[in-house]
Image 1 (tube, rainbow, N blue to C red):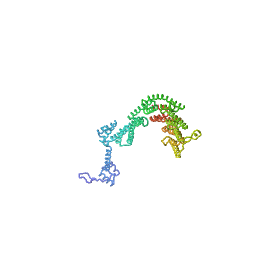
Image 2: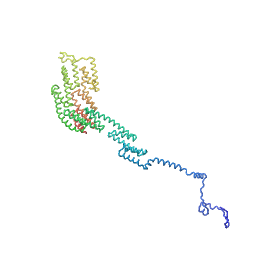
Image 3: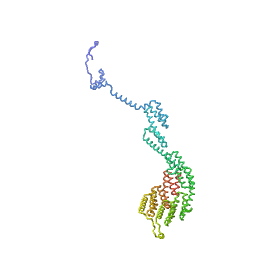
Image 4: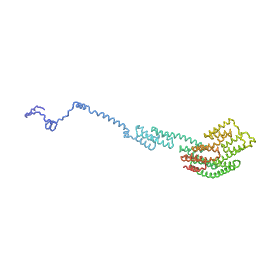
Amino acid sequence: MSTRRDPHDNRPHLRNEPTLGDLDRVDDPRARAADGLPEVTVEPRRSRHARASSMRSSRRGPGWLVPVLLLLVVVMVGALWLSQNRLRGMLPRTDLNTVLEQAQQALKDGRLDGQDGTSARELFQQALAQEPDNDRARDGLRQVGQAELSGADAALQAGKLAQAQQQAAVARELLGGGSDVDRLDTLISRAQAAQVQTVDLVDQAQQALAAGKLDGPQGAGALYQRVLQADPGNAVATHGLDLVGSALAVQAHDALESGDQAKASASIEQLAALQPNNGALPALRALQAQSRQQQDGALQAALKQGQDALRAGRIAGDGDDTALAHFKAALALDPDNASAKSGLGDVAQALTVQANAAIDAGDREHATSLLDAAAQLAPKSADLAAARARLRSKAASPPRSAAADQSEDAPVTTAVLSPEQSIAVAQLVQRAQLATRNGNIMMPPGDSAYDLYRSALAIDGNNVAAAQGLQGLAGEVARQFRQALTAGKLAQADDMLIDLAELAPGDPAQGGLNNQLASAWLDRAEQQLGSGDRIGAGQSLAHARKLAPNHPRLLDLSARLQGGH
């Protein structure tokens, strides 16, 4: 404070001594006020380094703010970029939204593709042309591809292969391929291959129908049915099958009118297998039953008369009262009648016995006549072949003297064989025995056991091994028949029965074998009916009917085949 005195002050001058005051109360504002001192704010003492830093900071400003602001700018720009479609959608886009709505409606209505600009595919593609990154348009095209794929599958199931192929191609284009598209393409290719085969089957069926070949695996009926199994809606095959049914009905009716029961039965069963609801079947069945009843009486009468004549020794010859005449009359009524065929075999066997008696009596001319008659009925009879060999051997023997003819104990002279002939006969017998073991009884021609034994007997008609081997072939065929029957080889068993009938005509055991095979065919027919194979069942029934026309199971299975149950 100043110590200078004011010149205008008249008061006496008093000296004030300086004082520090109460230092203990320096921080107390009230104390300072009482002392009359001004209020002073005292800052805490800081170091020199802290004061320098504070001064530099005050000059530079807040340095952390700049990078933070830059980071915020980058984040905002990225968010705007990622959300541009959403943000763009917030803007008013009347034209694009309208196109998308029209595309969705077209998709909903099933208008997937086209060329007029109103299909879902065209509209979604139009939207993408306006905005290449539009998610709604992309998803819409994917939905169109899926719809095309489903449509192609449905078209394939309906047999519309061209439509299926077209839609599958569009689906592949929109979806970019995939396992579902590949699978559908494979199925379409298989169906197209089957369709080509179906066309070939239709051509074959039409040719068979034109040639009059109606039944059998390669007949028109079976071929048309195979077409319908592959293509149920094929109109050509349906119409063709109707034509086959009409032809079979006419064929059956004509056969009934002419008394041909076997042909009529085969035609009726074939018609029932192809068209179980054919309108002609009831009338044909009724006419067949009436005709069969009338024919059965005449047939049984002919068979009985034939057996009576056979027992009376009226084997063959002129007139209508011989066994041969009666059995032929029975076969005229029923060409497949097993009893009539067996009767003719009995006639052939009886003629062969008479021929052997004539050979023994030296009556070669009469023996030849009897064997020729037997050959017309059973040309491959083993007994007949042996008898012919004996006849040739007798013819080659030197004539006997009168004294020898009068002596009952005189030895029978035979032709003397050369060493070469003896060797040839032995080789033929060995080959025949080997062919028998291999099952080559009647086939192949020339190398069958039957032909080899006959060749041996042609050289030496009295060869015991050849004669016994030839006559034992029937027993070997019967053994092979049972093996084939056990193995279910019914067609082979059929062939064995035919061979047996030729080798041993009139053998009474054949009737039992016929019934066994007929039962096996009926079993197969029942299995085929159960699996829906109506054509196969009809063919099996025809085999059984041929073997045993009066089998009790025939009527039941025939009714099931006709009724479709």
